Image (cartoon, rainbow, N blue to C red; front, side, top):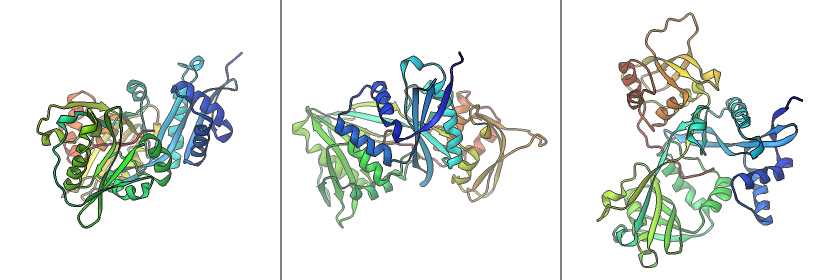
Length: 397
């Protein structure tokens, strides 16, 4: 008898079966009260949820969270792949692959031009077009090596439970990076409050304007910083001075920062433990729509460059395109038809294209790694129009 596989949308009626698989796959257990809170979150968060059924038996699942991310200071609609899980007896049967491909089609239809995910395996998701777009710098600092405490203007005030006070500061900070989330009220309520518990200290400058904050907790002689946000150097220095005041009650401090953070340069002893951690992957869902929203560098001329995109899972992205960038930095991708002559072109896969436009890696570096093909002059011309920005994601899903 032939096995029948169905991929379909799921909803609240499948909540219990979804939680059973999630708790098994991700190895956690929730109390009745916690499950009730999760049920509320499940119902209220904007998402499209998928289930794979084999002969009517629940076999695998995933969700696309409807989110937004900053790129070049602008908000792009983004689909966050989350909760990917499969029961062991149904693994390695291509069920997740089918869900991913269907989700790509539907994300395009919903106008979600880019997608993020946290991979269990970078190699697995790379096959479907996702590629590394950001990494984090993790510090472990012994108490006697913390930044020097210094007097600062303004004040630090402890706040509790009122995330709306933090949101304006966060958005101003996050918009400086490519790939940070635009946080909604629901995101603060359901995600930040659960994953980043502890103390909140908010820094106000001398005229009373909020300029930074830190979310942290102290446990077992370790101070763990969950989030460190600052809009300027005085805010950064004041918050580090505040954290250093905890030196008598801790043995070490751990913190994760953007990859371009330069704290060690400012330390009396910079020989602290540092670790670079590849974190999230991204994928352009709709290349033409994405490029149409993206702000390239202005120049005194327009550029017309042919690129060949390779995208086996999204045929609408696969093929030769004329990449036009006008002098102001506005751009478009237009698919070339079979009758048009193609001379020189830059050839790259959709994952590499994504990482380049996010600013995680440069085209010339990809050429050195043999990850793209093309005339080096064209490569340099295109790279010269791509803004330099650091990627950062201080969230998880």
